[in-house]
View 1 (cartoon, each protein chain N blue to C red):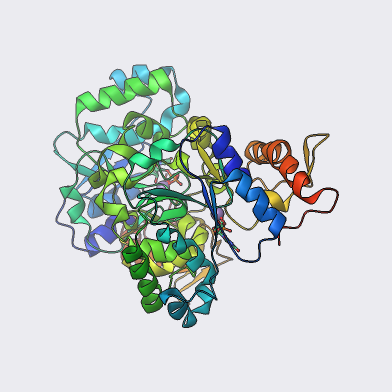
View 2: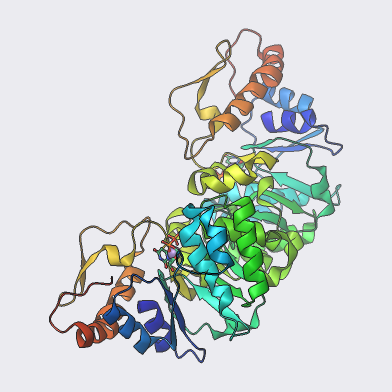
Length: 253
Length: 253
Ligand SMILES: O=c1ccn([C@@H]2O[C@H](COP(=O)(O)OP(=O)(O)O)[C@@H](O)[C@H]2O)c(=O)[nH]1
Ligand SMILES: O=c1ccn([C@@H]2O[C@H](COP(=O)(O)OP(=O)(O)O)[C@@H](O)[C@H]2O)c(=O)[nH]1
Ligand SMILES: [Mn+2]
Ligand SMILES: [Mn+2]
């Protein structure tokens, strides 16, 4: 929801699609429908297509599979996938000038791209091949990033234009590992990615004092970006949640 | 010394040059001369050229400057610079097919290259421009990596062939940060870079038991690579040191 609102607040001219699991609650879905142009429920286990069959052999790749589902959005010719734990800091519509598969390097193993932000072209053919790849080879990291890097295996060496600048997928890990570079280039950040176990929603926020409660793990969440996330959540998302839930506690499903 | 021996043991056909400071002891220099084709003493503060003048204004950039000195090796048309804390695991002469400035991405901020391994073309003109850049802009990280990344500022976006595969400058940080990728690609490693404060020579080694004493910080030094380093040091470098120092304790200067 915060991601969607951040895209809207930077005036994206593109259609926004949210892929959600079947467990997401009705009111939550209603809120998502107010923010996104399309909310598509992706039901991994009950799908009756080839996907289902492929997955039967590898139940461990469930979450991976969910992300791959974005290739089925064939009513669009080109899309940008964004993890739910990303936050947009400026208009990034120019990403649609890039080709499949464009992505930013992963800090850590920089010849891999990070699969939190990538440009792709929906296609049932590619989707089928990706599923087949999953079934035959699995994922070297147990997640979608391993599959996608193996499948789009020439990313590191083939075409510099498919290397998105790191500021389109800036993860807090990088801030921590090479602080001088962040100080040099960080003010140009366009997308922040809160990767790792601790997500912005793992913290609590006091909206009156505008303060995040508890200690912030600076290795995974830069305090300023975390504050940006919570400010947008409080100002733009909470009112929508109130409309749906009234005085009842929110539950996402 | 270990780096030089590792290049020799993988049969490099290239000339080896060591750049050393004036503090390096005589016997140590003799050993270096047995391993390298050329040992050049780089005297930062006493040099009478433009370098000296430029540095007067920025004494903090001393070490940076030392590395930049490699551009003065103009009796070669192309070179590969390698940090003293790197170790070669296979022949890498093919790096000479690359152009200036080719380098591998830095894990941490992957739109910067790591300056531990890079291909360059010696040139007094480039050298002068680099020094001028240092004087005018300094280094965003206080070291050579900041200067070189700012000077060769289009590395991230201009030419994929100038992106050396990460296996030519594999740092232990990456192993720790994204272990599955290391398991997938690590066996292809060609150059290991022991970057960070703890260097292989910070540990002690028991050559009889073939064991590293004390606890190894796996975040900075992969145990296998560390062992490779020490095995080569004991077998190929220690005998040369004995020849020079006899029974006296080694001291590098
Ligand atoms: O139960 C889940 C887990 C993950 N995801 C999606 O998969 C992405 C990748 O997971 P995560 O961001 O936790 O991985 P990280 O970026 O920390 O490696 C998320 O951002 C979500 O978009 C999802 O839809 N449902
Ligand atoms: O007193 C010094 C410090 C550094 N160096 C050279 O500069 C390189 C970079 O330093 P270091 O490897 O410690 O930096 P790191 O790779 O850990 O960032 C070393 O490998 C050496 O080649 C040197 O010659 N003398
Ligand atoms: Mn994520
Ligand atoms: Mn080094």
